[in-house]
Image (cartoon, rainbow, N blue to C red; front, side, top):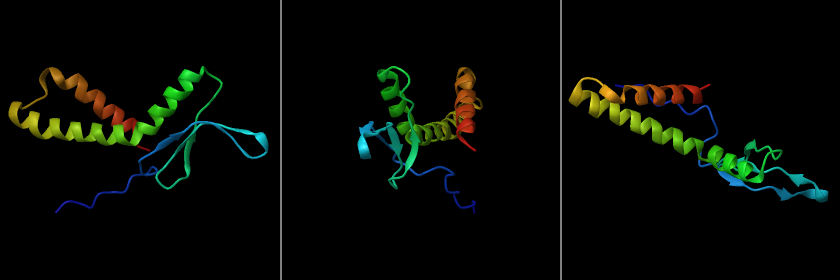
Length: 107
């Protein structure tokens, strides 16, 4: 029997991007990423071009989904491709990058 799945150490997704808005007393609130619980996960710097701010925010908001998809892909490759071929062949550099990215996302 396998061990129960450990809960993620990060705020569960989905995460959503909320563009900057004018807050109380006219203060500008930075664009932010909120978790499913409604709390801020991150705010996004606004001292770069607006297109970067928007793109960075969308990338951060997609992080939990991207991590889950990468884990699923890697599990598929490890179970299916390795079973059929014995190794990863030309895909080894990609598998290594996927493992490194997953490790980077873990505390």
